[in-house]
Structures are given as C-alpha cells and as structure tokens.
Length: 449
Image (cartoon, rainbow, N blue to C red; front, top):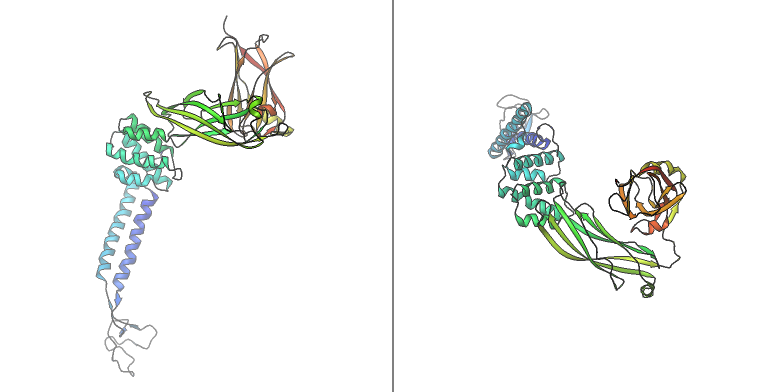
C-alpha cells in the first residue's frame, strides 16, 4: 500500500472545526439564557416596565420611547451557566484542535503515529478511504518496526478474520497481508493462522449445463481464492475422491492437483458407456463429487487444513441431435482475434521424449473462442488439441500430446479453427466466434543431440 507524504485526515479537521462552531452556538444559547417571567422589559437597559402607566411612553430608567417597534421585549432572561461552561470547554477543545491541526500541517507531522492501536483499528474499519489507508499504513509500519504487542496483533487479527469470514463485509487485501506478516514475525497465534488458511478458499463444482446424449460430460472442481493477501502464503493439494453422476458411481474424479491458492482446478471429461446412458432419462440431472483439500503453509510445508467435502451441481441431458454450441460468423473481428492469439514456441521432445508441448496465449480477445489446434508443415497437418478462451480476458492454455512420428522441422504454422466440439469440452462455452487464425512460422525447439 503506497501512501503519499504525511497529512492530517479531513475527518480530523472537520471534527475540530465542528467542535469550535458547536461551542460558539452553545455559548450564544447560554448567554441569551431562558425566560423566567412574562414582564415587559426595556430592550435597551433591561428595566422592568411592569406597572408602567398606560399614558407613559418613556422608560423610567433610560428615557427610551417604549412605543417604538421592538423597544420592548417580554420576560426577564437568566443566563445558563451550565451551557456557558460547556461552551467554553467545546471552544477550547475546538480551538486547540484547529490550532494543532494547522501547526501539524505546517510542520508536515502525521498524527497517525501518535494514535493508539484501538484508534487506528477504528480508522482502518471506516469508510473514509484516505483515513483508512493511512491507518493501515501506520499499523503495517509498527508491525515491521516490532512496535506491536501480541495483544495488539490479536486485536487486529480478530477483525481481519471476521471480515474474511463475512462475505458481506468490505475487504481489502491489507487485512490478509497483515496476518501473513504477523505470522512471519511470530506474533500470530496458531489458531488464527489455521483459521485464516481454512477461510482462504472455497471449492466450486462446475459441470456443463447442457450435454447431448453420448457426448463427454465436462466436470471441473475449481479452487476459488476468497479474501487473502497477495503474498501467496499457502499451497493447496486437491484430491478428487470420485464422482456420482445421476446416481451412478463412476471411476472418474480420482485425480489430484497441487498449486497456489490462485484459481487452480482439476477436471475430467466423463465418458459414459452405452449401458450407462440407457440408465438416464433426458432432463435435469445431478452430479456429486467428493474432494479432499489439504492446505499447507508455503514457508514450512506444514498442513494447516485437511478436510473432505461433498460438492454438488445440476445439469441437463439433451437428445443426441440437440444443438448446444452456436457458431457466430463475424468477419469484422478477424484482425483483432488474430492480434490477440499467439504461440511463442513449440517444444518437440524437448521436455520429455516423444512428447510435444506448446502454449497458446490469448490477450483479451473480443469474442469467446472454442478452437481445435493443428500444426502444419508444408501440406501436412497434425491435430494436437483444443482450446477455449473467454472474451476480454488474458489467459493461457497449455497443450501436451504425443509427438507425431512424422513431425519434423524447425518451424511450423499453428492453425486454430473454430470448433463446436472444442467448446463442448468446456463447462461454460456455448456461443463462439466462427473463423480461423493462423500463427505462421512458430519456432520448433528440439532437444540437443
């Protein structure tokens, strides 16, 4: 979090001025006092005119013409000493506040460095962005300088974890980063660190919403990061423990993946044999997947969370000839889609003997893409995989396949052709751009001989 040169919070300035103004108002009310009777009184000298003869036009004390407009007021008034005393206190506090504010602004002094932790925490929870950010910066500075006690850290951790667990509460990454830095400094309790890990992610089961009878059924379990810092404190291992599809237990769903809490996923294309398809009727269906999640401390390798969840989702089975993907022809997008897609290099047997690898990158294409990927040298083509990309998002798709036995050369064209079959392998792509993109003369890297 970057904070510019120290300054006084606008809320502090407004509060000081408000106290000063309030004090002046209360002082005026106190001096004016309250009415204690209904006698006519000379407004000029305060002489009681009660009993003044009707024929008399002059005040007996000062000689003022009492018949003039507003020459007489009704009632004696008694000053309110309590309000006057309170007003003096308010004016003193307001004057000192505005004076101190002006002095500190002139000297460039940041008041946050003098605030107690409970005050800074209150500012950090507030809605004023400048006040909040400065309070967070001061708390981070004190943590780095080892000026926070274990009790102070526990107080801030309590609020951080509350916000992390309450999805309706506002969240800034600073709350997570503070916990991670406090843990690194040895100031965070074991229970708080484990709770932070347990609340750091959710699992989401996704299945293609409409699947034709006989087609593969894409099923995906995605790790969704939820309210964490930006330092990558955890590593997650996800182990699939089986899939039940419309009441049918399958051998699918038993793979594993491991990576940071940053949107990792594990997925399967469920292919049912004919006898299993016969057990299903067209219409709404359920899928249930068991998954074991192990969250490890990246710094120590210690398992902080080890739990098993049952996830569920719904999908619909359609007739074998029902359309599930729409190809949209729009030639005006051709150049922008060509500019968005790139392949830097093809690895042929470089990482593993007999294996071919390449990465297809998409830099925010203007349309959703579902494409089969081919390599071409001369007139010869080889299909190597398929990709799907969402519109206006930066992403990368890695393709790995067996190296074709007749593939040879130091350069090859990469051809990407729109394909309904490629889209049907995804869980969420239904409308795709219809066209072809050729990335020419991509270098082929072979192992050194």
